[in-house]
Image (cartoon, rainbow, N blue to C red; front, side):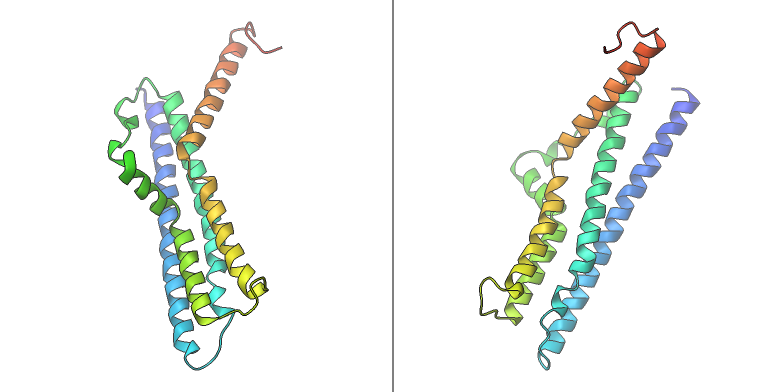
Length: 191
């Protein structure tokens, strides 16, 4: 492999590492913020009634889940690019982690991809434990459930990582084919 390709692969690897690092930083901050807020609400709820304060972690959770979803899609695109452009140079890089297949693999995937959804559910449980809304279709009931469902939808969007990776692989393959056709005088261009 020539030095230019090595440099590009190293740059992609650094971007992927930064992507994962950012995800872990957001998750750590979201967990810390949520736990601190819930602890404060429980401590204060013994003396004062605080209805909406317990929902404040959603201000952090929703943007972080959005960022994590974006990071997963970006990572899938980088992975697809490496698979397509460097398929002959790198053989070991793309072996799947077989331990993540099967029943336990699905459990691990669900838990790791829906971490913030589980935090949102914990917030809802605490919220409904402290607040006993009397009207079933009131804002006090609908808002926390809506916020939790929104977080779950964001997580669900990028859950099927392989679907996005395969789509990006096809896009890169098509792009390479079009570039090759163009460089060969346009013999096989689309009409």
